[in-house]
Length: 207
Image 1: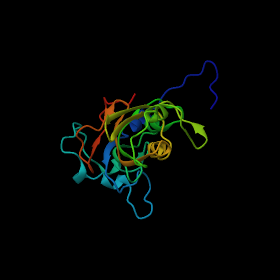
Image 2: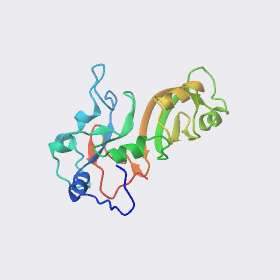
Image 3: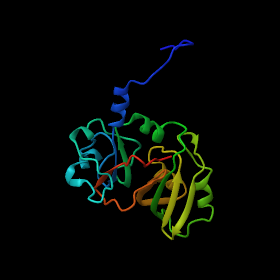
Image 4: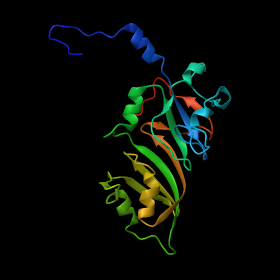
């Protein structure tokens, strides 16, 4: 609606209360679950959000309610073969912050790799992964990539194309053997066990 000079816009207290009741949960997604809707016989990570699977060390004292599960949607994806931090939320604003075009929220991954061809990994591999690759006809944003040891890489990205890390690695001659997301912005996976979940605390922010 067009707002004319001299008019005032106020927020209905009922709308403010409705927004406050929306919840977000953090799931440590195991292999074999998809992020969104069930597909090819695989269950969505949403089925893990049950009272039995709630992390017993969840610092949030919020009492679980069935209405917390309704309309939970993934804010970002992890493919079926990847594990780690997945955000499910009822808050559209949060979802837009995490997956909107041009977003700047960092996502950190630990990736186990091996060379596709025998022999040592070329010294130029890191340079290419950090900057210089394109996917789907689009140049990728610069990434922070470092070796943690001889077969583990650490990726920090600010975008999330489909299977991006796997495709980046394939482009430089590396096969991904395991992929785990450990951080989104300021929120870390921490000690949350695989297959369990916790509420995002009111004072936790991704940016």
